[in-house]
Length: 446
Ligand code: FAD
Image (cartoon, rainbow, N blue to C red):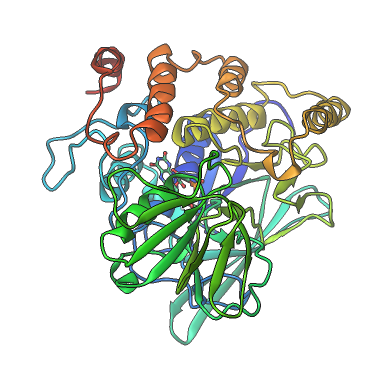
């Protein structure tokens, strides 16, 4: 690729990652087309009461719904932390908006629509257009095949060539389910949190919720309002289980499940046993790129997407193929923003990239360090709240590092999720940091 020549870039997905990628690519002078299979932008943040046709989400032929939001969902990060760095997620005076510090999901969708409209991104998006194939051609360009349903009988298939592809298809749609001994004979129902929307279907039932993250915590508490009993099974449960969760009469915390039986019994490692009607798997998601053909060069192996340099570029195809949004346990929007800046700058030749050999050596060293620390492959993209990844990206891009207040606020917020689960969205004591954030935001708010 010659230095500074604009590239034709296909961006797959118009969620937060795809939108900010489109903005950064466009800012850098590239020509951008965003493919979005839904008829609106927002990705995860488009709530729908519809669910997959298979509630547990394992049937490969099921009808798939992209979003995993439940109706009552409020964000789990303070809005000051969550928003893009130069487009603060502040409360607005527009009608029907949610000014709360931890707003409901609709407010995030409204914010993303504002973002797309203010940066002229909407006209870059081909709505209702699903990418079905991405593969490298002999001429070094990427073939992108897409399909758009004009109406029930008429589907338009298009094949095009692009200089580069940025994959922003999200990572919360393909359910990962728990491996439970005896589950094939267990008579109850199972669903994945991807398909949980409202508590009512769980009324008067005995429920086991598997998982230790925010979804498990939110969903179990919401269901406890209507269910007969709710039993959370968590890998991270400390000793002393089973124990009743403070403030609830029908919510218990248990260790992991040991086995389930034909009689409906669920046995936990802590020696306790319940007879349950439904198991809800709040057990995370799998990376999934059904459209990507790289002849086995880029693979998903035990949830490691690899090999990827800095979780973004596969060395064999860098910089023309990139992935935005792989790392987790970081702040999603600003992380995607910095990743996108880096991709855009590297594509234009303004930012230099290591040689292919050096990228491979870096990845090998990274994988070895995971092995040495006994970190399983499936945690390859778990950044474990290490914001030095963002510091590194910012330095590469010539951008200021993540703001000090944002880091502090993030760590306080993460801690409060664990220690003040019931109230963290409505009570806080970091007003000094909020003031600092707003002092910073002034430069971005017209
Ligand atoms: P997505 O938002 O999933 O967008 C991907 C887009 O790609 C979708 O629009 C999809 O339709 C499109 N797409 C996929 N495949 C194709 C294809 N083949 N062709 C065309 N288009 C395609 N983050 C926070 O910051 N704060 C929170 O409080 C928070 N809460 C969350 C709660 C839940 C239950 C979940 C599941 C996630 C939460 N997140 C939260 C993380 C959230 O996913 C990210 O904020 C963000 O949505 C990720 O953006 P994305 O663009 O990578 O993916």
